[in-house]
Image (cartoon, rainbow, N blue to C red; front, top):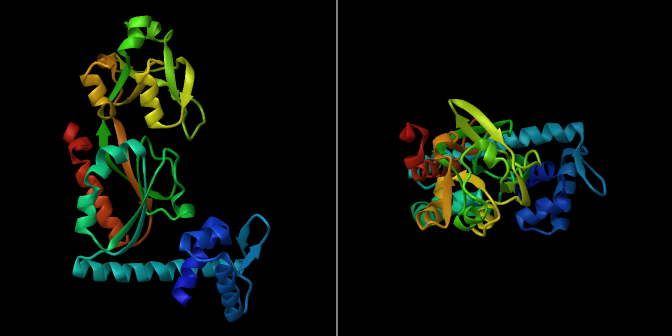
Length: 303
């Protein structure tokens, strides 16, 4: 393992707090990672990491070395990116985290085109409703709906998706169509549990120019967009989500919209990536490509 590989490995051990996790990510045995750091400490003549049975932490010297490593690696990435700009051939592994429903709608249908345009990029795609810790998990960028809450990230708003409140035709036949929010409050919901608060997300409306929030009881709570939609289709109650995800079911009448006149503001969609002085070219071209895919739903396009 050369010095640059050792530096990259060291920063990932610090990020993940684990030799095992960093070794698995790098595709090497844990013993190789341990030996590489031992040789590094021997060469530098200082102890860089404090190991325990559950966690790895940096010594003061290790923290200083970690910062220096990141600076050197960022400079190398920038140099490679500049060469890539000159040759128009971005290269390297790109780790992205995509909200599943957004991935299915905007990314996967045209991902083959991106791969053909940039054959030097190796994409590692994770789809998860859970918020990724970009720095700790080594993720280069994420595509996610809702409001960004992660500090230290660049958040670029790329779309605004109209939101609808719906229930299945069968549910409404059994329980009636609500005409007022007071009546609506007596209905059942499929409650979507926020990964941030751990609590069900209330339904949002705008009535007479003023925001209104309504929380419904429900027999089922979910944590994924696919489950949210599936439960509504099977008559378990109301949901509120982006219209784009429900177009087919709305079109054939399986789902019915209510309170269209009180719809909340369109839901924002963000591309987020770590703040850094020089963005690697592979990240830049992917972010630009995502913006292109979402252009019809960009905030300016809906104004």
